[in-house]
Amino acid sequence: MEVTRVKNITPELFIEKCIKANQPIIVTDGMEHWDREKFTPQYLKATFGDQIVQVYNDLFDLQTIQTLSEYIDTNFDRAPEDGPAKNYMRWYTKLKEVEFYWSDKVFEALKPAWSQPYFIPDTNLVIPSNHKTAKRPINEYSYPYKGLFISGRGSRTRLHKDPFMSNAVLCQFYGQKEIYLYSPQKEASVMNGTDFVDVKNPDHAKFPNFKNTTPDYKDVLAPGEIIFFPSGWFHDVTCLSDSVSITWNFVHETQLERMTKHIAAHPEDDQLEIMQFFMDGEVSESTDLVQYFQQKYSVGV
Image (cartoon, rainbow, N blue to C red; front, top):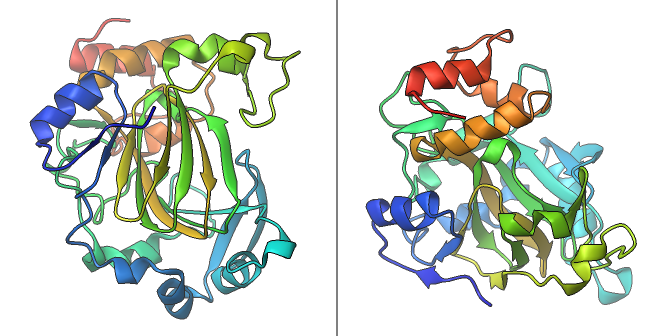
């Protein structure tokens, strides 16, 4: 089944039918007024080619750092006999207090070329917090896991779900991506402890329930389309061609109870450090996050 495609969806309807109902969607007109020529591999290489980028395998393990030019030269326009690209370039903006090769300066330079998608809320956010600003447009502010994905044909992000019950947004500028989506109700079939099944080469001994499990959605994301991955949904993404995308995560105030329950059940989640980074100094490392959200927003667990 393909993901529902829409255009001209209002922000109110998106919140009701996608965020609150926890349903994926593809919006086909959310990038119409963006300068997509600024997000081609040719432009990015010519403008930012000497910048150091982060290169990962299909399980989010950092493999190397190299220049953007080196990554594109090695992994784009590969001949068939060279096989698919094996590594995936994820170039994130700053997401915690460490010195690293972040992409913030690149996003600052690209700020005029894109904007907040008209249907995605930039108010009433919990993560990142709206504490210090009424609106938080994506091209001007930091968000968790905000990054450029510049990835050669065949590179893949294996099945996962996004941290601390956040939603993810993926905007496709260049190339196509094949996407498998599994609902949160299929967790027992696609996970074993903290491990996720490889949906394209499953180990049925380790994941016995996966044998009769099918994706809720299988689709191909095309240039100019934006897909919304709701909290808790499992997704596996493969680049069918050389690809350029932008991604970020957020939690809306209507999802507070769901997020708080996750924090209570997983207090040792190492991604909570990143969540705290985007709370505008509202909490310290010693803050009891469950208690904080209960008191601030009157949510239960």
